[in-house]
Structures are given as C-alpha cells and as structure tokens.
Image 1 (tube, rainbow, N blue to C red):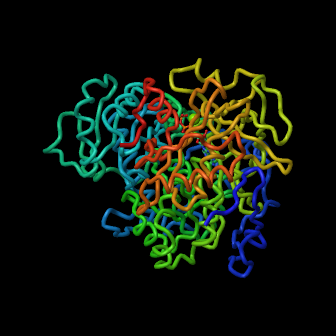
Image 2 (cartoon, rainbow, N blue to C red; image 1 turned 60 degrees about the vertical axis):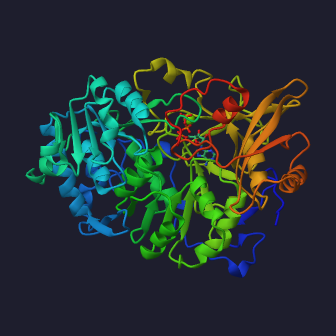
Length: 597
Ligand code: ATP
Ligand code: MG
C-alpha cells in the first residue's frame, strides 16, 4: 500500500478542504479557533514595558512572578474553581485539582522549601514521575525565584550525577520509588543539602531527608511571591544529548511571554479545552507546554502518570474528552504500529487540534492521523535552547506534509551557508534564527565559551539543524547538521530517506546514517524495524529495496539495509543516529547518559 512520497513535492492539507487526496466529505472542518489576524509580532508584543496587562501581569516596577501568572491571577478572573490539573495515576484513576487547590498546595510547598533554606537563585531539582507534586514544586520554586531543574524520571544514577553535580543542586525533590537511584551518588554531590521525598516517612529517612507530606502539612496557605527581574533565571534544563554531552540550558522569567503567547497561538487553547501534553516535564516540552504555558493561559491540563500504552492513551483521550493534544512523532508512530482497529474502539470525537514536536513528523504519520482522527497533525519545531516554539504549522495555515511550518510572528528564521550568508529558497543550508526573542536561553550553565559558539557567525543563532525554505516561506527539516550525509557530492538528509522507508507497509521505524565510502564519499545505510508479525527474509528485504529505489533519487536510496528489533533512542524518544554510526564504525559511543534502556 505504498503512496507516492516526495517531500520536495509535497501534498498540502488545506484548512478549508482537508488533505487533497482525501474525499472532502470525510474531513472534519477544522474547528480551530485561532486566527492569524489576532497575531502581533513577538518583538512588539513582548517588549515588557509595553501593555500586556491582559496577557502577562508585571508588577509596577517591571518585575514579575511566573507562579502569580500561572495560578494566582486565575483566582480573581473567574477560574478559581476551574480544574487546572486532571491527575491520572497508574491505575488510571483521575483526581481533579482546581486552580485554588494548586494555589494552596504550591504556597505550602514554597513555605516548606524556604524553611529548608531554599533561596532565590538556588538550584532545586525535581526528580519525580508525572504526578501533581511535579506541578506543585515547579510553581513553588517560581514563587521563591529558585531555579527549577527538571529531571526525567527514567534517568539512572550516571545521568543524575552528571546533571546534579554540574548544576550544584542544593535540594532534590523525589519520591520513594525513585530515591534509591540517588543513594549511590548523593555522597558525591558536595552542594546537596536536602532531599525531599514524596510519599516518604520521616522515620524511614536519613539525616537531611524530609517527608514531603510532613513538611508541607502545617505550612501557611499563602506566600509572598518574590518579585523577579525579567532576566532572573526560571529553570535550567539539560538537553536531550542526541548529538553529544547534554548542555545545561538556562531560561529566565521573561520566557513566560513566549510560553504564554505561543501556547495561545500554536496550541490554540480556549477556555473549555481539555489539553494533554504527553511530554514528560523532565523535558522542555513538558515544562513549557505541560506546565508554564497552559497554566498561564488558565487551561485544564491532563497529567498522565503511566508510561506509554496505546490502549490507556486512547482511553484517556476518550474518557477525558481531550480536545487539544500535543505529542511526538515517536509516540504517534507507536500508535500507528497498532494499526487501525484499536483506535476505532474509542470515540475520539472531542479532539479538535493535534500537534507534534521533537523529531521530524513523517508525511506517512500525518496521513495516518487523517485516517484515524480525521484531523491533520500540526508539526512544530523548537529546541531546549529556544525556550518556546519557533517554527510552526499554525492552526490557521494550510499544512504541507513534511514541513515544520513557518516562523512564528516576530521570529526571523533563515537558511544560511557556513559563512552565515542567506541562501535562496530551495537551497539546503544551516537553519539560523535572529537572536533576541524573549525565551532565548540566556546562558549555558558555567560554560560561557560554548554559549558564545552558537552566535559566533554574523550574529546568527546557529541551531545545529539543516533545513530549506520554500517560496511560500515554509521550512523543511533535513537533519541535524552532524547527521547530514554527503554522498556522490549530494547532501542527503536522513529525514527524507527515513520518511520514504516508512511509506513501506512493513516498516515502522527507520534510522539512516552515512558511512564512509572511497568512491562516493559516504554511502547511505538504513536501520529499520519491521511491523509486528513481519520477519526478516530475503523476500521482505528485496521488496523493501525495490520499493525504496523507486521512491528516492539514485544517489539517495540506502545501499545497505539492516533490520533491528529496536533503534537506540534518547530517553526523550529521539533516534540516536550518532550511536548507530559509532556502532557501525566501531567508534567510541560518546556520552550515553541520555540513552534509553
Ligand atoms: P542535544 O542538543 O543534546 O543533542 P537535542 O537537540 O535532541 O539534544 P532538544 O533541545 O530536546 O535536544 O531537541 C531539539 C532538536 O530536536 C532540534 O534541534 C531538532 O533537531 C529536533 N526537532 C525538534 N522539533 C522538530 C521538528 N518538528 N522537526 C524536526 N526536528 C525537530
Ligand atoms: Mg540540540
């Protein structure tokens, strides 16, 4: 069931009429509510001394507090008893927390943390699963002006030690299940003063370890929020480590402008929406679009504790009547692997807007989305460093399958050569941004030199990704600059080859690398994972090889194909091509602390 794929000659989803190749009457009219006419350029809107009083609230002296914006103001704007968080635990039981609940809990937590000695600027790391306390602590830290450090709950001791040592963490908040992973490393963390344990009991804890419930229980329900300068740090987050050692990216209070506005524009959150961001708050998407952005917009947010499970995911979408859903290509591909039958058992009619981020969104996944959800999936591009979405398929724009969309209002993105000269539309080059948007990372923790590296050519911010722009201003991802393959004088992005492979009915995942070749410079090798029930055989491989030759230009089809049970991924779900390459070439594997098991 191959469909013609060519990302340079895209299919377009028109917002009025649906995907061109679909029958019009099967397509829902897209009930997204955003309208480009309401968008103002970020540079104007985000200048904090201008009026944004109805969007972000600043104190008279120009300072602000993110928790005030994310919680407190909703107590006086009619949302006091609105559900802020639907917390779903591992047994799929749902507990509702209103904005008022969140106000009280985060005030008590802030008071408790201050009592432990936490001050403005201290690093407090959150090593928790996706539970209500993750939200509460993140916002309590915002009240104090302490720097929140999210840690993904799947990290093992090595990954934890790297991050906690580098950042000089003063306090860690964890739970009884995760705490054992800190045991072997805590003695080697000289700056660590306390560990707070959700679910813990004082009698079972060591010195300087505190049971969360006990330390917050008698705390006052109000707190004097710290007034913070726009440039004071808000959170710090280590990147995924897809390309190398994770970097400690520092973001500031003023990020809230971009977090708030992009949540409004791109996610299109409305008063009655039920919103689910599947990303873990240990990653930037989970922090920005799981916590800060949606709460600042007064939304109702789903917090889902269990790991991935297709049935449970569909059940949550159905039971909670989720309307806006922000997820990732990896998750969508895993759902796609289930085929069409499972999803048909659920009524997902409430869904009105679906988004994806983190990796390139293969056209095949969008087509599948059109089939099963009757909605297009909106890709968007950004990075831990950018702090908020930069390039996006806004709800009001036609989608070109395989494109990341267009730069958001006020963001200037360009494609340049190695010297920083802008290239013409259609030419592949380095994706750069004009620095200065409010959520741009303000430093790399204790690494000025590495920070400056990003900006050293003609004052562009170099993203490390390669892409091209079409004449309509849409951007198309090619690959990480390090991953781009140079074969017979042509530059080939792994995404194009991987997407073409995914069009084959037997293939559910593909990772593509270049390996050195005397004649061609590099030749392309593909690692593929086959659909359940299909096993590797000469016949299957021949079918795939014949298919892929027809799909791609002569220089771009993979000369070598290897079947794997699974591909190495970062814990945030990204295919680690550098590891595939190191394994293939017998090279050192580099930093693997971000690698999934
Ligand atoms: P590291 O910087 O440590 O190697 P990382 O780049 O994977 O890790 P993140 O900041 O989480 O860490 O990811 C940002 C990167 O993810 C982007 O630079 C890009 O390569 C990829 N990415 C994000 N969104 C998209 C998208 N919509 N399409 C293609 N790639 C994307
Ligand atoms: Mg990166």
